[in-house]
Length: 598
Image (spheres, rainbow, N blue to C red):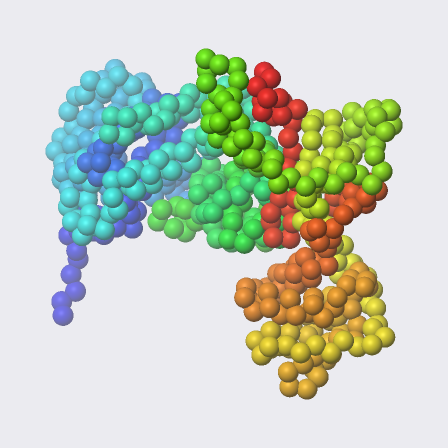
């Protein structure tokens, strides 16, 4: 079989398959070129999800006439002045994007160099082009891509629907806008404006303001701020800054996770996994945290020439980056351990909304609707405090303490439905799930004792013999050593039973038999993770759940306030072991809204 060189147009089409996966890939390359050209405004137009048209205009420095043909020639670039990969300071550097796109589309390039009085244009049809000709463009560069992939029908056939491709492009624009707050962006799709955002000008809050506009005010206002650095050499630092969401503000997918390294949007499973591990057992199963994080590293500390789409990087010391990332997030989460997002409170307030709206011409409710609207209160069971709070004592003592915010969760007012503590703080009222809260407190005590190798064991005077079903029995047998690490001494007892001789002292007089049976059943259903520490956390979480204050138990004033004070000093107390919130706050302003008191 004869070996031969492939024709240049086929080489470019092959390269296009690597660089330009879909319309959003082409759009990303064009926006990066505009950013590299120091543009402060980028305007994007899309038709049919980018299949018919992708147009990107900017006000950057432009391209000189003699260099316009070079822009669509493979491996021609202005972004490697030293001809080395050791110090890449631009988003683009391979010189492949424009020629790859031009090889599979109809491309028009117009550009006016900043020091020139004339703009020039070039048309490319499936890689073929003629001479440049004058253009009426007044500033910067404009690239228009029509009929993307018409030269490679196989690729065109595998694109998704117009709506899906448009959403991919929208996500690319949002990411680019997040990491470039000094640049204004406009985006129109099929004649409809989807984004119009000006460049930020508040130097101290550039990223925060941009995040607020693109990810929402509720996230920006309630998110935890991250800012940390680590010295690499005498003059070089690894820096991290941005916002992370509270554990109770989570999503069913990772679409709200934004990670940028040196201005690049990165999809790195290792780093994403490291971030998720920092949240550990504060998230419900199958849920993902929200974050927008920016990492800045020296250019010689990172290799960006790893993936054709430049979405992956390699670090000189990846362990150092993960360590700083996880350490920074864990530290801030521990500092904000009992906070929950107001989204939960808003949802709660929504439950109080009247089923029928009040007639705007009347100031009363009809009798027909009154019974239906008040049915929410028909089954309420409220248990008063065992010892009522004296008005004088509360005003003189409790409120004085709350005013200086010593007790963020406030002072207990009563217990509702034998499961919820209602307390008052300086901002409003707080509703606490007593079982969920105590579940977290018990888990954190057990984790602390294990980490400090100070788990106290209690020898059972009468060892507990427990019969188990085959599957739970096998799981317990496989993890006898792990259970011993957290305070259980368990031995096999015949073919279908075990005997428990020692237990963690923290369990006290708990029903050991029921805890082991429930543990075996729970683990049979969910399975165990592969990581040893994750196994420990899961088992401790299950044990803590069954050991905690149960729903339906009456608590007196002292017990309720003691629970609140422990929550205020216990890590991760804003979420139970399964990631659900332990408290909901309703501010005075929220309550007044319920009564139309503006």
